[in-house]
Length: 391
Image (cartoon, rainbow, N blue to C red; front, side):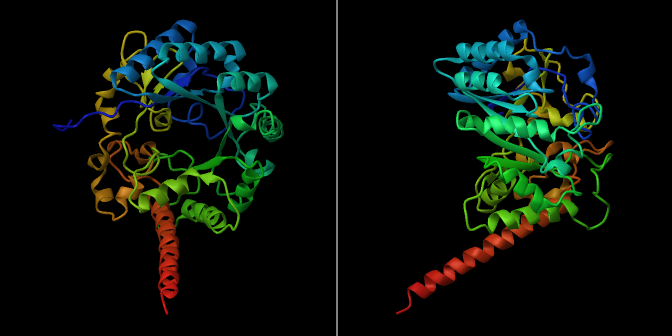
């Protein structure tokens, strides 16, 4: 740890309130990749663990002068925890934090169980709802299936129909979609856009240098960059308002010198921590895609503070920005925008995470394209402004 460095306190807390899922998505980092620790986790976060989480979150916020934090209810599939248990979790955390710490709650669900009973609860408690949807029926059901092979698209659409109806639309937090190169990018975007979400994001499938993602060949081809560019051009070139797309908007912010607000791009400190179902305090859960044990710490919510976890070298590495980048990244002119890419995607056995992203070329292609489009439009605006000043 370098002299003078101070950790950034956690502002986002991901609670694994249920460790199992009612779908069997074949790309899932929780169940299908390197770390299989879910098998030994209790199915549901117990009330005593919830009580400890509430105390520790409130203490961390107050100790670090945070007046507002975010909590994401996650899994597995969090709705499997049930209405009564979710009510207990939200009410307990909020009671411990009030009145000086405000908690915004978000639940990320596969959408299959969404119904008026859950949505009435979320309306009562002020919980925003994000849903995972991979596009149209064909694209979605490539991966997001039940254990017996049945697709989940029809069930997710039924849940979204309830969520986007007038009584509950204000709870709609947005859509998450994992890229599959076999799906047409614009068709996928239009399928998501049809629900008029306030925002959406496209996630690159998890992989690394040991286990490359599907279709990411060696060489200079950029299939994921090209896929995302097709969506960007459709989105950016629209003559009518479009939903926010987080990846694109973060890149655009970074290109004009603003800091990133996402762990997937840029060099801003990652201020996210996970509490597993059994109460273990862990690093960001997508690291489970790298190797078994990648997320683990020695800390438990019943005896340890979040402040103690902040001092772990592995967590500090996500907060020290440019100092954690590989030499190859530092030699690239885009490293302050790219930030090395999502941390789990950098892993290579024997070298750890001190590598460029396995998506390095794709990110370079996407960022360069967005920069060129923005530069072109800025030049056009300058020309118009100059013409307006002519006598």
